[in-house]
Length: 351
Ligand code: C2E
Ligand code: CA
Ligand code: CA
Picture 1 (tube, rainbow, N blue to C red):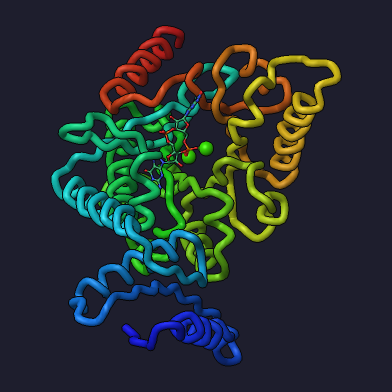
Picture 2 (tube, rainbow, N blue to C red):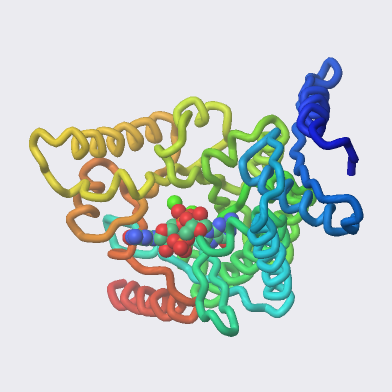
């Protein structure tokens, strides 16, 4: 906390922020600060002033790096909601309210399950099933994504090992949890992956970590972590591929094994719209991605397939593996067990 005379607060905070923003040492470390300013008449309790400044600082942080904001009434609401959701998530994790659903990743030629993506759900005691979009961003902001992601990783490995124990090694080639950038910055991440594999008995080659391009583009530290898990034999998939800014150059720096073509290039890909630039562009991207992947020795998965025409078109373009509501919605472990069991029965009947 810094106390200034009225009228000088802005100049003081700007001087501090300029000083902090200067690169430190030969390594040119960059540090950013956020600040909140609050003012009150003499005699106001310091705790009130601090609370207001805190709410303003929270608003400044939401607006991005190196910002300062002056307190205005009502600013405490988002900060309170944030604190409340953070507390709720912690409680939910301790109470075992998170569940995983599994969406099949399917061989487009045979219709067989090639793998599963694990997707987290929050089984809230009052709100019912909460989708990840409603809590993953808050979990990332509060840091709770680290213990939550660790649980997702461990549970995915445990469940995949259980399916393999029940149905044999051919039942599932891979199991893929999503990993947030925040987890990659956690010093225990590599050890967590190693422990999840060791404790479940799942072989490293069957674990695929799904990462988005923006997560991967976070500098040397993250790249080193990714190389470490890659060296363990774990495969890395680039999620939502094609939506980022530097997809192509990224593939050179990053030890990816799989690219997942984003749903936005699959939507309407079955439509032939002569003269439609948008439709042509989607097909061109889908074709370019599979050709690039082939050239680099990467596998592909086409995401968000919602009908057979899309599956046919993608197969023709060179995609052999896909995912989407048409091929299978995300379902509970029990429901996926039933699908795997029936596949195994028909395989045995055909043999
Ligand atoms: P994502 O990794 O791209 O996952 C695919 C999302 O698309 C899932 O939504 C899935 O249900 C949905 N989807 C699959 N096929 C279709 C389709 O044919 N049509 C449509 N319209 N949607 C389809 P979900 O489960 O709501 O997950 C949303 C996002 O939340 C995920 O996107 C992922 O970024 C994040 N997420 C989910 N689980 C986790 C997790 O355990 N950890 C982290 N860090 N993020 C997660
Ligand atoms: Ca994913
Ligand atoms: Ca995706």
